[in-house]
Image (cartoon, rainbow, N blue to C red; front, side, top):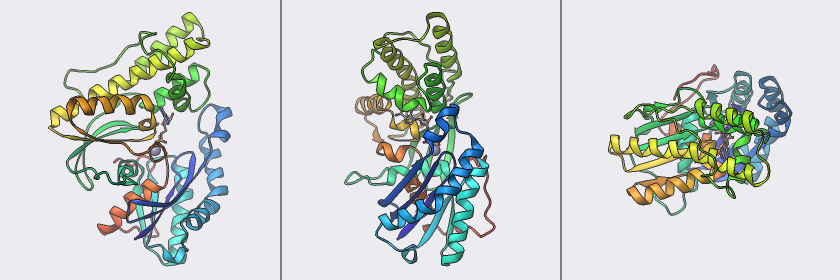
Length: 335
Ligand code: KG4
Ligand code: ZN
């Protein structure tokens, strides 16, 4: 089964062709980072216009890269929310036009369900995660712990009360003068920094709580910088390592707490922050120590892409989901 995935919820114009919900035949991501960087964040109207300009060539390229023709596709899966309304509309309207012209079924995918489905992509010989399991979803817009009992059977256990973890990385990156988005740069500088150099708070609301809070950490960073100025040279790397460790520490502790509380033995991690090397290493140590199974997709399937949308779309399609040509977008679509 060959499914085309289309993703335009934020600042990546992406299309992918995935076979049987697992094998990635083509994965094209046209990033708009350079376009938005001068503004220090994503400008919604600019994002929409850029999607309009690139969506058709990106889709054509994905189908060609897959060595397929449009007629070979079994279904078209598209992100319908959550995300930026204008950006989402470009993907959804394009997917609808394509489905209508080709006479192919259309499937609407929740962007967050897409992130969760990324663990089924290219997992090679490793066994795919079994149910029930815990998901740690860490992206630019979301930070949540979710119990998953079966396909589409999700229960939210905890979420951030303020900033998302990726948002914390990006805001601190901006404070440190590292440009936008900050996550990748902080990850890189942290690799050669001392995580014990700067004392930063770990917000752990409530003893049995599974919620997160990152705004206090951001304020602590702002206060330190206002007092001491921007760190230079190695001190910058140390600062990045200390900040990253503060975020990672909380994510790992809460994940362990959730696994224990729910009696789960398997953790999947997804969203852009799951690409972070510090988080991946800390979770691998925790998994080895506690004996739970850990599934984290390769970094390119953690950040926004359309292969994950095709994977989630395939699962939905096989369960009978179909969207009509009246499909609309929902910028606030919950999981
Ligand atoms: O999942 P994603 O691509 O888009 C959303 O759905 O939000 O996540 C983007 C977020 C950004 O905040 C970005 O800074 C962060 O993921 N991110 C990282 C890394 N790569 C991306 N954060 C920390 N370390 C990374 N290596
Ligand atoms: Zn995302």
